[in-house]
Image 1: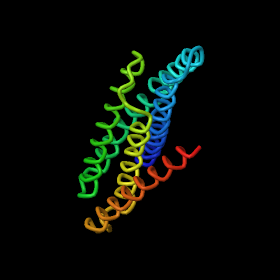
Image 2 (image 1 turned 180 degrees about the horizontal axis):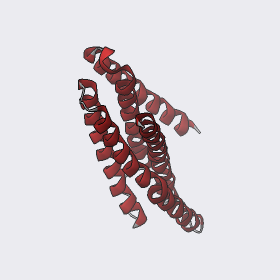
Image 3 (image 1 turned 180 degrees about the vertical axis):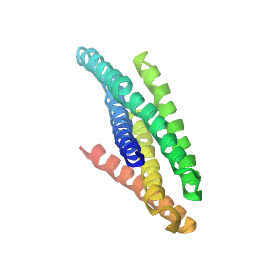
Image 4 (image 1 turned 45 degrees about the vertical axis):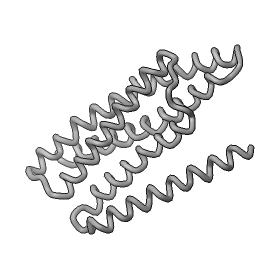
Amino acid sequence: MYNYIKALHIIFIVTWFSGLFYIVRLFVYHAEAAEKPEPAKTILQSQYRVMIRRLWLGITWPSAILTLIFGPWMWWMMGSLPTWLLVKLCFVLGLYGYHFSLQHIYRQQMRGVFTWSSQQLRIWNEVATVFLVAIVMLATVKDSMSWARGLIGLFLFVVVLMGAIRIYKKIRMKK
């Protein structure tokens, strides 16, 4: 039974992350549509609101809830709380915090309020990537990972990611 619960947990983690990655891209496009001239602005924003609502309420939220159901169920079946899992749960709590920040942006954009620029949203989109790397590394490497090397690796990953964002922005600005 444990392996079935684990499989379902992984499936809903994957669909949750898919939703997290794509929703912010839609936020970016929706925010950029606000800067378009009419009638393109109205047409694009109307379409993005439909896409955002369906993704957020139909895929992302249900996946987050099902991940939250199957994760503790697995933990209960394991019967213990190893150190690696405790650290992973801290990152998972951070991921839920990130999810709720996207809920806030979702509510704003559904009201037509755009407080985040498209560049800020692009950077914010990468936060999910950092959580993904940390959580997957902890879940697969577990106790065999050096904490110091893990934190240094995560920090270097963030530095490379931010560098890639800057390079991409320069390339976009040239076009």
